[in-house]
Image (cartoon, rainbow, N blue to C red; front, side, top):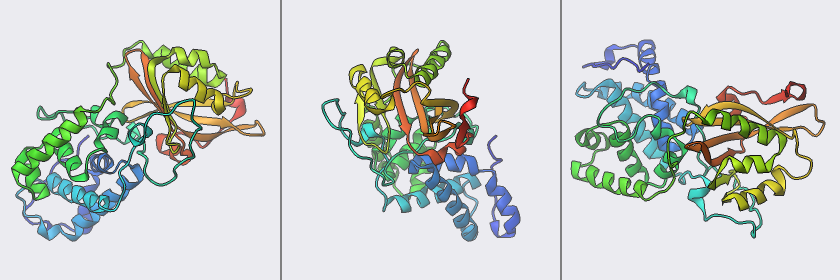
Length: 338
């Protein structure tokens, strides 16, 4: 549930304990906003803490002309913009470099913090529905939207989020960012044009029949059945595993990547998948069997993009430590595999 919005004329009358309780009610929606701005869950959490700290320190500047929520969004957005001046943009492999092929060696991983991170569905606040919004709460957190969003310069990103995701009016955004309304409209036009030029969204909403397909997907991974896996994919499906920057498209090149290492050799029972949700999409904790064969250790998080009853994209974030954020363990007993 969204926090109750407050209107005050004098925040200096509110003590620190009461202030902390007030801002805590906004944590989830602030975290989602900062995630959209930053592209990183870790950075988003830092920005929320910075927002609440700045709000407490600057509480005497709140004049009550805007709602308390709007005031917090102004602080959060500007905190993100301050940090983004010194940060490289976040990406997924498809927005980082050209498509790879079986004729090229798999490139080394890039370990710098340049990759978009997935976001747990459990962290999403229930957002109200406003007719002014161009993107729904679900659409505005998907990996396709996030990847396109992070092609924008930070200030254009902020304008698009406030206008098309939050549903704010141009005058409200202009006041928050200290711009003219014409500058806001110009930035929004450029941002919308950039997003419209991207082909990063699925062709259709997933159908109800996808649930058995996802069960087949898990079975294909756990039995290393490449043919079964490929049958679930669109012909132009995409496969990537950041921090490896390469990405591959189409059955032929994806089959080659799988054969190169993921399913190389005797791979039956090498992998185990546990379901979760990320970025309003199906996701799986991916576990690899240990050398001793006695347990499965966290390998990363897969996020699946669906198009109708087929899989359009598989992206595996090879960051094992993120799994507890999605309610998943770091290891599984091998005997637990059914």
